[in-house]
Amino acid sequence: MQGTDSDYGYGIGRHVNNTSVGTKIAYCIGSADGWWPVDTTIGALLGTEDAQIGGGPPKQANYGIRWHDVTFNTAAISLPGFTVDGLGNIASTQTVALSGASGAVVQAGDSVTANSNPLVYSYVVGSSSGALASLGFNLISGTGSPIRVNTAKNGWRFIHDVRNGTNDGSLVLNVVSSLAASATAVTFDTSGGIAVTSQVQGSFFRQGASGPTWRQGAGTPEGAVVALVGSIFSRTDGGAGTSVYIKESGAGNTGWVAIV
Image 1 (spheres, rainbow, N blue to C red):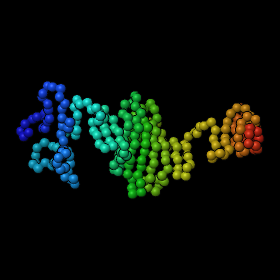
Image 2: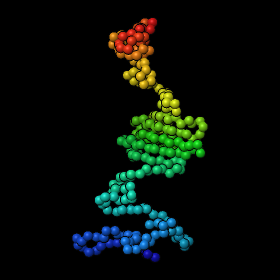
Image 3: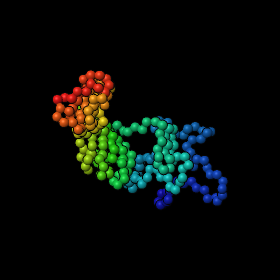
Image 4: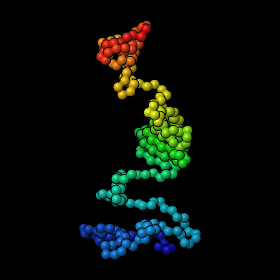
């Protein structure tokens, strides 16, 4: 190739116009009747070498591997437990691990504002005590801040931070409601507690797995609402002395007393 320009440096082609089957492996390393030819300690099946002569063009290329106008019936890349098909879909039977370096990001989805809802996972190394991991929805990773993709919708991000003594390992749910501004919506602490910065909604609230409840509705709960002793009922159409009831006796729908 010295002194020439060429479409390829090494090529395999077939110029006979017939229907015979081509070679099974276009370029094969090793054979059934010989020893393995690659150094098992520092050898590589395909790679580059440092230039031994000064000057010349920089060592760069448009592609590392390029398949042009090829249909892959099974996979474009096939390794034990890992394949990439001709459309870029990845299948793995093993764990796909990020580098331990700070700023590692995995993103699923594009950044088209009108119709995208990407999922992004990021990892930031802090110190010997731990790191920060986050999982976001409708977000991409920005410089220092998450960035919403579909700006008509909120973004959400779960954050688990154990980088220093101040961060105790609580799980925090942030809402991203503007271009790159986020605020804490819910905190799940290490004792199982939940702290909410805005309103909490539900049909009723129960203390513990089988404890008293707090419900609301129209009309008196007496004879209508089954609850345990100690439960509370807020009457939406009540008045003075009939707005809040407490269950003082029984296990059925009786025993409610209005709090005056």
